[in-house]
Image 1 (cartoon, rainbow, N blue to C red):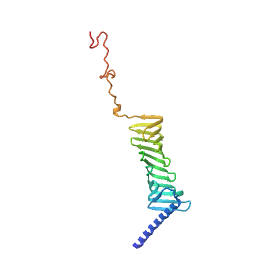
Image 2: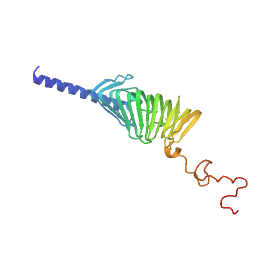
Image 3: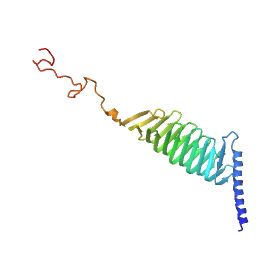
Image 4: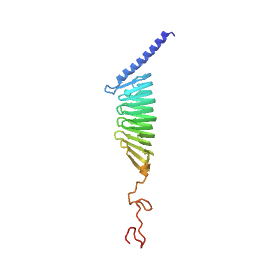
Length: 258
């Protein structure tokens, strides 16, 4: 093949890709309601099925989708459902919602655009930057509309001087409350708390224990050291403040007149 032929082939391939992207853009414009939130995408490769009732588009290679204030990037993103309302993402998934200050990392993520419901599978991280809370688990469901998060399996919570672990966690961001169950443990400033159920106020870091409770308090050296005894209050046998022994019968007290 001559150099000119190769150039023409590459040009034709580029035109085909551009045509496919343009066709998809026109299709999206046709099916998305006029009042829908802004929606855009980029990827190295695009495959689309535009048959009525079977609409499906696969973005692969540095795929990125922006839906309203949510930006998602992944190795592969599949768009399907009515108005392309369902996004199935896989491979190094990262998402950030600038309105809610929520950042997500996961190997797999599904997102429903209409309900703003996202589900993460595999070791995942959800970071609430507004409340400075990091939640880690093997399965996470985040409801953006209700401002709640449900996490299961190997749950870990991190917040400054507070850390928790459990098998289940329910986080209400608006109320700043974190509910833990399934052998929950909370650690704060070196202290350890265990209970059947633990409720944490993420704003004040107050911990409420429910059911069977166990605790291990590690106090500082200053707190464990006995405070200086006030004058005249030391126990018998101590040097400072010990009361004088009464005089023996028939013996005048010291300093008393004979």
